[in-house]
Image (cartoon, rainbow, N blue to C red; front, side, top):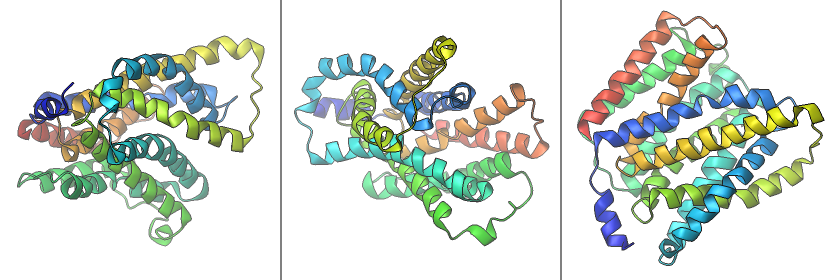
Length: 306
């Protein structure tokens, strides 16, 4: 496909793109439901590696079919793809997990909420995106909503005394990588089709995942009676919450500004809250409902301005 025609095709933004990004991100909120069932036998790195091996079956034919799109890729494009795959998919997840393991959970969650700010700043400077006049207010409304979803009306305990530390730096690094991945994804969608970007995201992550899994040196021993259920959960996680959700996400991102898309990704914590309520019977508070409403108000007005 001619790259100039593709760029022209992607230059028109639509409100549908915002909701496709939100829907794709919403599926990520279902991930813990399946992953917690497998973590008893495998580590997070092992699970992610197995999921990517399943996705290889889908990704390899897509890359081969669209191989002509790779011919014109320069070092900037490959750098962006590696940032998305290695930075956003692998390293950021590890950093966020390690931050939880070594630091105050409230601090980590609070700092992770800075992800939209990083994405907006990077989109402004790297993609030269022009933001509408009221976008700053919508961003503040959305951030307040996510704060209420996480902490309610109160100030997180222990946050002020632990803002500076290794776990905080890891949380900030993960937020920066995830925000940057949104911007790099939008950059690549002016060069390649969203199916190609999705497939390369999975393929390029495999070498790094093999290195991390090998260095982890964890046991692969799984009880034979659990083979069937674990295989089912991993395939379901890979296909539904990996391939399908990422395809939706990049399809929407191809029609959405990166700065808008990062707000649409806040559907992830919304679904997480709903799953805690429905599956784990955790009572939803008035503060969380308020946060829920604020986020959806922000998403509605963002989609109207696309």
